[in-house]
Image 1 (cartoon, rainbow, N blue to C red):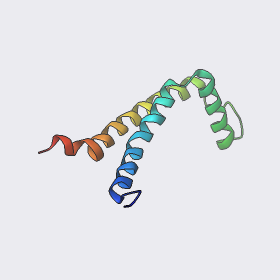
Image 2: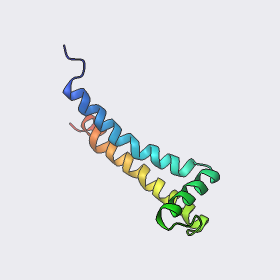
Image 3: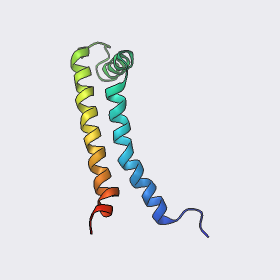
Image 4: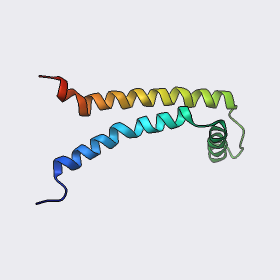
Length: 89
């Protein structure tokens, strides 16, 4: 008796692939203004060496749009990897 079946391991990998973009998208959308400002300053410091190169409203809009796209990707991946076999004949 195996503790971890190969089919179960593949299912776990599929679930992780489907869930992680959604979690990241929800984090981008629902994070507080302080967190978004911290992400902006860390990104600007890494890329440009200055903490306020990108204006905050544009960065917040980018996070909102990318979070929405990540949620749609998560829903699409969930359909194709996990749910499609239940609804097809």
